[in-house]
Image (cartoon, rainbow, N blue to C red; front, side):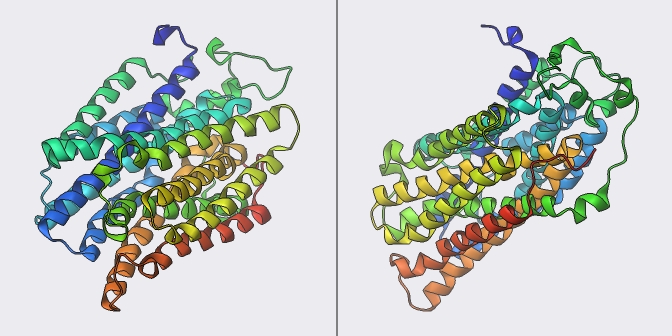
Length: 446
């Protein structure tokens, strides 16, 4: 089947899946390549934490501007420009741990560029995807992050071993360039949009079926001119004071705290905590991220099934999946230091990350329930919180490990790593209660 023969909204979802996949190959790839180069250069753990967390400063700065830009000029254009920017940075920046200023500036620039991506994606999805397909569409798109992380974890250590750390940057730049060409060729705004601002402002929402009597196809292009001829003012104050929005923000923070700590420090835990090389682990090292890919899509399909069959309301569905995902993940995270074999750690981290991904069918789709017209804006705000979690979690982990060494603790002992995994475990419990108390599946912004 040719790509052009697919319904347009399916093609958009597939391309956004590939987009998130490539983005996370880049993130995992930098962690693997930099860790290898930094260890060879004798860089200490605290300094590694600073460089690894620098990306998230740039990423945090561009989240809300990314949502605003997607709202104003269209997510499709913003997505292409941001992809080109980070790909070019990877292509031309040398990987040298001793050139700290260059590394910091490069990671800041990549962070800024990638910060525009997810608000733009969610703006595009809100325009194209009908409400009854949102859970599985968003879950498939975001599962690309985990599939990319799995592929990167499996393939990139071998590339580092064979061709050196710099070759990872070249590989990532090539992947970014190829995706940009696909997006430029196949992506489009919703049909009959008379101006990019109209589509960014929620034009697609008027095309989407919300009940059995409204079976209009997105491709037909019938629309309400009342939506396409004006750009609504963004209700910033209402958004910032909304308790359901804050429920999404808190859970996004916790999800990304746990994800980024594991993504950036699990290689170090294997190398120093277990004295086991990633390059010797074969395909098992990709299992945590592959589990995220599977559970993310299971959560999306389950949510849409519960909603469309009217087994549960949208609100109850979001709360159920979010709670199950975060509570199980909290247990696995706090138990992780007790496992002292590579297989045990892979199993425990797979459970933790898999159920966190299941929880995304709760909080991560919820902004499209409560504010579909401002999905990119709300995503930018909540992802800013998630990015701050990356800054705090990745940097704090390096400091915790340096403190453990200062206290004469061996990094091979479980005690040195206990706080690293207990903190995200407790955050998961707290966040699940916040979501139960404050969230809703009803539309609260017109």
